[in-house]
Image (cartoon, rainbow, N blue to C red):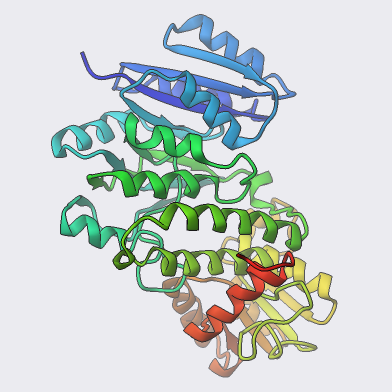
Length: 408
């Protein structure tokens, strides 16, 4: 018989989607599954739906608990699990029929301790396939050491080698169990990374695949990043930074884990702050989105998480004038009641600067080429391109001045 795979599904306020998620797991070609549905005190009909499915299939186990957040739910699930392998599926997502068979085959054929997949991002009627930056293949020995040197940051600013998500990976039990239980319940941003990267560091062999059968649902309500104040979010990120710093401290310096963490965390801080800081409205001298645009008329190019946060923080600061907001996927954002226009309309907008609200270089350059084709001067186009020294200064501000006190 095939080894048992335990699939943990945290469930909270997703009654519209949980049935689709469960059915996609039940429909797997890999049949020896233990499906653990963790009702995290959901106030809707999710508890009833979970119990109904459990009555129909003996592979399903339901845990009802008081609301404690995602980390708490995953811990409850992993403690109740019996599988030789552990996987996680978020309750509003779905997986293709061959998802777990493909990941199990990758592990069994290579002898790996973990299989890392890509995923498909489903946004309304559109789907986008997303792969890891590191190429597919089996990593061990020197190749595994090379993977560790690039898994959080693979050479370009805010470009990680292996995606942070827990749900597009399958681990042998002994490599993820303690790592998940060790995650601080207070971590509310980067919960996946807090378990994933320490678990990968324990592995002797890792297999990266091009499997993209995990379908991450970009819901309308999750597209709208209704954040807390940035000071509150900075405190949460500081907790994550401390946690991962401690986890990485025992590994060889040649892995560059702390340098990678700094780079990754700075990118996350920039996204959450919108790049305009938010404490006193300042960033280190020479950092884009600071003095260059204060009091100027700016057009925003990009309406994802970063773009939404930038618009929000600029409005909070009251020192910036937003001339227009543009995105190629404007229809999807309008459906979420966001005032976003088609990218080509930027050609008729009057502004001092246009900000490309992306961190990865490929996306920045793709947008830059389009803007240049519209006749926009390159001198008017801004993007995040901080030097190493400015990055260090900015990270110090985010980690220390954001919440007060010294990081140590």
